[in-house]
Structure formats: C-alpha cells, structure tokens
Length: 239
Ligand code: XMP
Image (cartoon, rainbow, N blue to C red; front, side, top):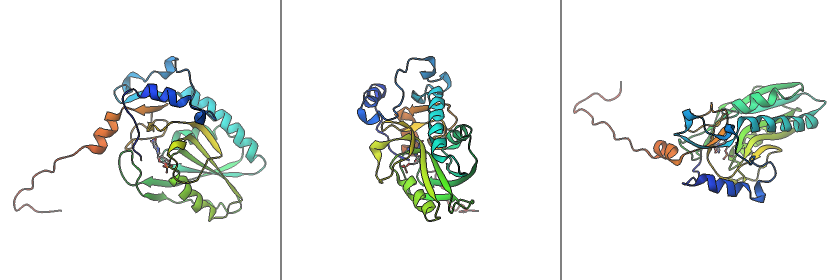
C-alpha cells in the first residue's frame, strides 16, 4: 500500500490533473454533476469524493469486454485474477465475456498496513495448468507495477501460449517497474483510491464506486501511536 499525496482542496487538484493529456487514453470521466457523483451520506465522513461512479465503471467494463472478446476469440482462455482487490471488477468483467473460459486465482498481498507498499507475499498459488494456454491476468490497479511484474514472471515461467493483462485502474505517475497493461479501464492521478474491491486496511471494498479517502482516515490508522499497557509486577508472560 502506498502513501498518497492528498491535501485539502483535493477536488480542485484532481480536476486539473484529469485534464492533463497523460490521462486522455481512458480518462476518469469528467462532468461530475449527476446525483451519482455525490458521496452517499453513510460514507461522507471518510470519503472525500467519488472519482468514478458505478455507472461509469459498468459502461467502461462493457467496452473492455468487447476488446477482450475480439482478441481472445476462437480459443478457450484462462482468466487469472489477483486476490482480493479484483473481487467486484472480476465478477462484472467475466459476466460480460461471452467466451469459453476457466477461472483461477493467485493470492498476493503486501506486508505493511496503511497506504505504503511492503514486501509481496503469495497467499494462494495458481491451481490450473496454463501451459500452452491463452491467459488473461486481471488486477484491480496498476500502481508501481511491482505486483504485476512479479506475477507476470511467475506465470511466464509456466509457459502459457500468451498472456494479456487487464486492470481497472492505472496510476502511471507512480510506476517503478517497466510494466504496462493491455486493457485499462481508467487512467487515474496519484490518489489513494478505495471502493469497488479496493481497500484501505481491508475496509471500503464494498463501496460500489471508486472514491478518494480523506487524509485524516488513513493518517489516523497508519500513524496512530497506541500506548502499551503497563505490566503487572511478577505477572506471567505468555500463556
Ligand atoms: P503495485 O504498486 O504493486 O500495486 O502496482 C498493486 C497493488 O497495490 C494495491 N494498491 C492500491 N490499493 N488503493 C488501493 O486500495 C490504491 O490506490 C492502490 N494502489 C495500489 C492494490 O492491491 C494493487 O493490486
């Protein structure tokens, strides 16, 4: 997880950033004036703004699915999805893929709470044999690229016929590894985003939209200092 560059006045910064040519390939939709763009009352204390609405996500996924079906037509594909952030994206993506496919998961998580990346740990290995197969690797967000780089190396070693990568979000500004995705839902600026499967400390995955957290939410959790309880003299340790 990573340290976002969020400040007061973020909405203004975001608007300017989204107009930058860099984000023009599949940009976050502009014209945030519909009622869908308002943060639902339940989340208003934690979520500063809706970056991408559920309707915008649904529309974009239909477009991505068409591209994928065109490229994978004629052969059974293996969809490999990374846990846990792809849960909503994957479900919506594959129901739009009218193709024969098999589905498997790789579990990968980074040690370290908050928004900063830690070391990658594989929590579930691939079970299906992908040798000679057409693989579609799905992730929620391509950020520094470290995750996709590692996972691509792992899958390539299994000798698939080809691998294409598909991500809902691309944060190109933070890239460290030279890795790009073949199918990208939205190019986004360098904000720490949550919702639609993406989490902060395992929370907010259930938001139906992609939103930006207020800085006080992640600062409170990741920088909180909890005083240790004083030990009783002569007390038993452990047990
Ligand atoms: P890297 O940096 O390896 O990141 O490309 C990939 C994984 O890191 C998580 N990630 C995020 N999660 N909001 C999140 O909720 C973000 O803005 C964000 N950026 C990276 C995510 O799990 C992704 O698969």
